[in-house]
Amino acid sequence: MARPKEFDRDHVLGKAIEVFASHGYEGASTEALLTHMGLSRQSMYDTFGDKRRLYLEALERYSTSSTAEIIASMNAEVSAMEGLEAALLAFALRPSTRPADGCLGVAAVTEFGRTDREVTAITEASGATLTTAFERIIRRGQKAGELASDLDPRTVASFLSTTLMGLKVSARAGGKPAVLRDVVRLTLRSLRK
Amino acid sequence: MARPKEFDRDHVLGKAIEVFASHGYEGASTEALLTHMGLSRQSMYDTFGDKRRLYLEALERYSTSSTAEIIASMNAEVSAMEGLEAALLAFALRPSTRPADGCLGVAAVTEFGRTDREVTAITEASGATLTTAFERIIRRGQKAGELASDLDPRTVASFLSTTLMGLKVSARAGGKPAVLRDVVRLTLRSLRK
DNA sequence: ACTGTTCTTGACACATCAGTCCAGAACGCG
DNA sequence: CGCGTTCTGGACTGATGTGTCAAGAACAGT
Image (cartoon, rainbow over all chains, first blue to last red; front, side, top):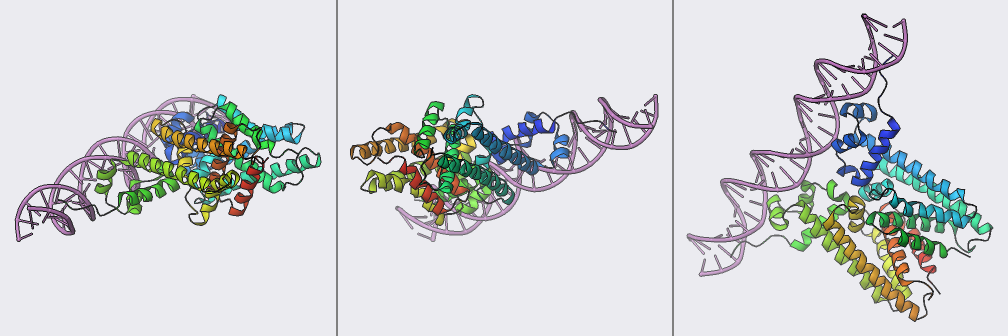
């Protein structure tokens, strides 16, 4: 019936994620977004509504896909310990491919704190998903005798989430992969039986 | 000779820190800064130059005083282990007094990454100071037999810095003090002999 | 090839941004 | 009290911000 869109919605959303991740919400001008997304002003507004909705959608997609990715790489390993290592290393290794931009989720938390309801809802949801996944694999590791059984799985899950965020900030601050790798190793050491 | 300033430079700088910490650099409008600092436009420009310099000065002061505070509370304890606990808890406990605003240093890192030279210089300097202090107390703890001696002090220092940043993000995200406390406990557990 | 829809482009409107300027009031000092 | 300095408040400028509008081109279906 009509002329089809000349851009892939998912693709340009990915580009928007890059811009928001490296400049933050306030720091990302519509001009910069449009240039990097490679589409016209009107198309962006027609497709996403406004800057805020574009951001929320970007954050939503990033959060879900990012946590899914981490969980997948975690469950791909046979042992719980190796799974946890893979999960924590996922970000520590990423700098080699995308050195500049950090984690959009962490950026959202630091920029908005808990002042923005919709943002908070998204970050909390992905955070909960991640900790739950951690908890599950921790219990598995305890049953298999890999992890110390006197540890509370929920606390360990919180600990790992916290460390992961710390690693993300470190990576953004320019922490070298080798150092991050050592940190991961030390983090897991404490859980070993 | 002349009319004296009707405001305390240090005090208003502290107010500026609060605004930058809760809204970021881009998110903090001059209007909001002036209102919260309680001074006129002209006074601010005369005193600090421009928004960027105000920010750099705020970041500088925050970074130095914040790390100094952590190091002080760390060295105030008799044992190395208790010192480390105090250092990590410093932020986990702060939310009760100042719930909203996070760490300006972490905010600077996530907002700018390594794109801004002057910002990077400040954050790196305070980061180095902190890790060095960690390293020192770790060696002390190892000699005293409190900490496992097979650990590399530099790696442990990086690990603690990373964890501290993670705790700061968690606190900003709304992590409950009780949970943060447990995370700290678990963090230190791994270092124990 | 015609029609209707929708994409694209560029110009436009309005608000807010950082930063400057000026006039007048407030103050310390002689 | 008067002088010089500096603070205060408000108006102002130019740039940039987000978001809208209108005109024309591109495409699918008949």
